[in-house]
Image (cartoon, rainbow, N blue to C red; front, side, top):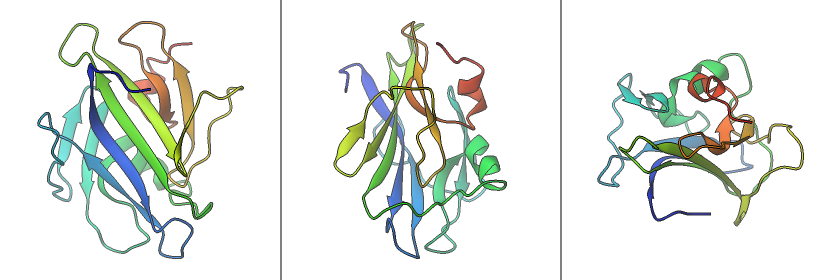
Length: 159
């Protein structure tokens, strides 16, 4: 569900899903809605955590702007699991940006549709690793899908 008071901040898109050269690309968007330039090693601070520029070194390696917690997670887990040939996309939106009620909403897309709230508390497996659903109660609570590694979201998990 999209809201009129939100802005796309981040997107991960699996490239060549299901192929040997499958990878994924992370894009961080500025307030102007344009993709931010990727400078390898450069860190961009946000209210949802830090993102770091990762160089495009091979087609099967994730690149672009990657959340630092997710990048660390990838070093000890399979961070590029080949699952199927359908498109996978993760999108992160900021809501009520700049206000005291600023919040975050994450959505997962698989194939042509959005993956809705699960019927249990099990994380959703994706090629980028598992995502869990948060049901934030207050406007500023994280809502929707978030990667299990994101410490800024773990600390503020709303049941």
